[in-house]
Length: 245
Ligand code: FPP
Image (cartoon, rainbow, N blue to C red; front, side, top):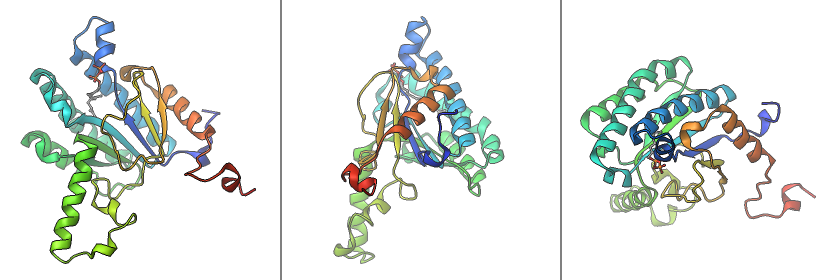
């Protein structure tokens, strides 16, 4: 904690929570046990980010591709998500956390969708941290969805072609109200983006760790933040320009 400079904290942390299955396999447990332990890690990381004063935390909880997993695993993940939302909504209100979600939310079953909507409604006036869950999310689909939104607005005369630029385009993404991530963490030793926030991570700092998601905790989070703070973000400029030399 002493290594963290509060003034240099990332505003937005995004996490690819990977390795639940491998964690379980190593312990001779079912994949679902790995996901159950993964939810404990979610709780610890949400609480820690909130205490630290992180503005936005985006968690890749379920990708569009994840629907193709064995149906028992999909059902278990959806059950865990629903249980988490039911249990944690009050806690989020207490901690002033606003819940938001990105992805093809219409793919969720009616009961999960209703639970999600209810948790978002309960927390809608919270103005501390935003906990943003990526659910049935795919980065390519998000960009395609934005293109369809633009075509529709052009046809309706709501926007002119020359108004579509780098400042207006992000308004068509599911993340429209959020800043781009400053730090993207991926657990479990994989070095892939896996269709996550493809447009938004142009200048995001990547932090890859061998730690499997169920073992990720406050100490691991602080390590990632300390590493982020030690980096120089140049956004395509030179070091001299950044430092005003
Ligand atoms: C990746 O591990 C993890 C997932 C596909 C799901 C992440 C979900 C949770 C942590 C729990 C539910 C989430 C919330 C927000 C309550 P993997 O199964 O791909 O692991 P493997 O690569 O080792 O098989």
